[in-house]
Structure formats: C-alpha cells, structure tokens
Length: 400
Image (tube, rainbow, N blue to C red; front, top):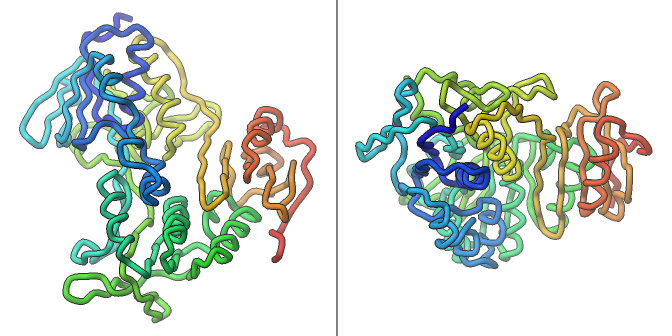
C-alpha cells in the first residue's frame, strides 16, 4: 500500500498529537495537518483536576510538547477552528470559519464533551471540567469560595473533591451510585475509597439524584436533592460523565453509536480512522465493541492507527488500563474490573491501604487493581491476568 500523500487529524490533544508523532516516527514524510477547536498548544488533561486545579502546576507545565518539538513535526496546526462537517467520500472537513480541508486520509480525534445538568447554563458558579480554560476558571472561583458541591461519583468527581478538600473548601459529593467509583472498582476498593473521602472531610450524599440547581440573581446558591434536602453552595462542579464529540459528523455516513464506530483496525470508512476517547472499535481479543476514556489508550491506540494509515494491518487489542490519584492514593486498574466481579487480594492488605487485587467473572480473570502498589499491580497483570493464581477471597472492606 502506498502511504497517503496527505493526512488530516481532527483534534490535537493527546490522541491526535500522538498519531501525528507516530506517523513521523514510522517514516511518514507527506503533508500533515492537525485541526483543533482549542486555541492552546496541545496539553495533557489528567493534571487539570489535580495539579493545575490545585495551583501546584502553572498551566504551561501541562503542555504535551514545547513549541520547538511541535515545529519539528513539520506539520500545519490549525487552532481555534472547530470542525463542523465531514464529506467522507471526498475526505474533506469543513470548519466553523468556512474553511474546507481535504486530505487523502482523515483521522478523527475529537474526544469528549462534558454532560450537563438541566438549567446549569443559566447560572454562574456552575462548572464542568474538560479543558484547560475550565480548570483555570474553576480554580479562580474555588479560591474565593467556601462551599463546593460536586455532582458525580466517578473518577472526575472524586478527583475534584479530593483537590478541593486540599484547598480547604467544605465539599459535599452527590451521586446516584452507592459508592465512589462503584461501577469501575466494585467492592471492596470502592467502599474503601468512599470511606477515605469521608475521613478526609467530604460530606457524602450517595444513592440520591439531583432535582434542581438553585440560584439567586443569576448565581448558583445551592443544589436541591430528590430527597428535598438543599445543599448550600458557592460553587458546583457537574461531573456526571462525558459523551463523544460526534455531532459534527451528522450526515457524514459514518456509523455513530457510542462514538465513531470502527472495525478492529480503527477504520471507520475508506480513508477515515478514529482514535482516542471518540473511537468505538471492535476488540478482537475480547470479542466485543469497546470505547475507552483514558490517557493511556489515547497514546497506545495512536500507534496502531498510524501504522494502519501507512499500510499495516494491525488489530488494536490492548489490555484496558486507567488510573486515578486522589489524596495520597494511587489507584491503577488493568483489564476491566467491575462491580459484578469477585474480588481477591493477591498482595498487601486492605487495612494497611496498600494492596493488589484480582477480579474474576465466571471463573475468568477480568482485571487487576493496585492501590498504592503500582509495581505489584503491573507484575500481577503480567502473571495473573488470565490465571489469577495465588489470591485469597475478600468480600467486604475493613472497618475503621
């Protein structure tokens, strides 16, 4: 297969930039263009809810590459221009300013957008956290605030709550689940994480829905729960999930389910690929369609997409992985741990809050989790994912 003469990557965050770098590293010398809706240099998102929000990092430290490194890519960066349409047959992308960019190959890397609560757009002081500007605006508000309500008990909600407590705010976390990260971690890790937040001073309202946001003079003043309780708030962070940015692809002919649907090679249509958070692809190893929202997947998938753009025929079959840092806790999850799995401790001790666990469903190992045990979790992933030998059953988290 002859390499394409030109490649257009729509989205220049971790997945898009990693694809561009992988193309050059694998010898691609053709015309390379990166189109991005944001005006900033490419930056990393995981630090936004932690180091950047806390003020421990200046925004520039979150940049993925310096100016010199970007220039060395010999690529054209078109910043601050959202894509609004794709002509799949012509492989032509139209932008909000009326530009039309055409290439032999198009790679879609438009990522996610935050889900929102009804009525939040009409109230000042209600935030979502997806981009750098979101983090900086939220930090400015939290410095002046005293009471924060976080809506959402997932990874982002937990991280924001932990960071805000470190900043000295009174924090209440609200969520529909019975524990923080319950769906991703199951017992006992989710129960232990939830208790840790409570011990650090976070007030928890779990298993309850938000009925409405309350405001006065255009600014949020509280959150009303379905139970009738009103939580006073100077600021609210809505962290109820994200959805793939695919609206601009309506009418393109691409299959848009939970993201851009691709085959096992991350190919969505002839000459059109998807990568990162927006890509839903057929995982041959798991025998199912998968879409992953994490930093590691963005860079790993980019390597395979770049290779396939250049003529390889590689299926993308990763072991899924994500991590979260909250307080002094580093949780690393390999595979697909879930609330439905039976959990066993392979190393360490729950009471010491340092352990590695194995997850099984129907007798098969489906995941490995490390709680402040990164090295042991990696070793256990290599040795046990698929065997799970040497673990002992645990059904509940320790008390105290």
